[in-house]
Length: 304
Image 1 (spheres, rainbow, N blue to C red):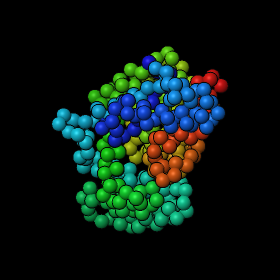
Image 2: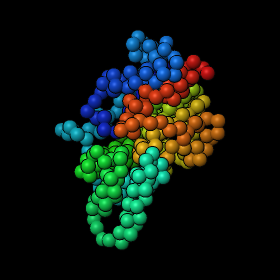
Image 3: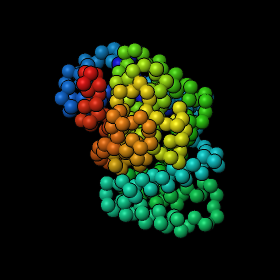
């Protein structure tokens, strides 16, 4: 059982709980230190106490026997969702990208894509024009179209498996539940892990001072929003405070302000915060190292 439970996102299947703790905890301690709580920061990293913070690792559940890279092949239906996911990322960029040039380019690309919708093409081919449009924006420009496609495929496959495969879902939640107990005060989830953490908070059945979601796709209507449990979505009843942080250029974070989407959010959900993670807007360590992350964790653990 842990005081702080950490929940990672997609594409971590080649790592381990220990490796991810070694990546996350120094950054989390740094954010807490920036918030002015040096004593807590030391307990999280320099003088780490057993059980103070643990990673709920589930990446290996996406590996199949004899396979080292995870299952990335999509069905036709999943390719259709991939197109919808990529298009929603593009629409999100048109509204919230930090650079005006990216917002304008995204709007232009959306207009061009709308004009080409009548063309006949296979389901996989339909994704490529959207990816070509995305790759022209700053968050994806360094990736190239081929790698951007792999990012979308990996993201969609693991998100889809979690939300539709009962064996995977139960296995993931069991991994989180191993670390949850009466002493748990904070659950932190990044990316897909924020969806897992949200559901775990519902299942926890005990008071929880803080749910912290980072780069969360919970507001992504094309793939995620209608699928978490329970439905309809709502603030987990035991959660005293839910903080949602998003970088404006993090396209996975479908919308920074989740408040209108989750009944019961008044006075509980602090959402719409924006942070600047630089060239890697979706990077978990960069979210964890922010003062706002540290402030939320410090306040929860001190009872403020």
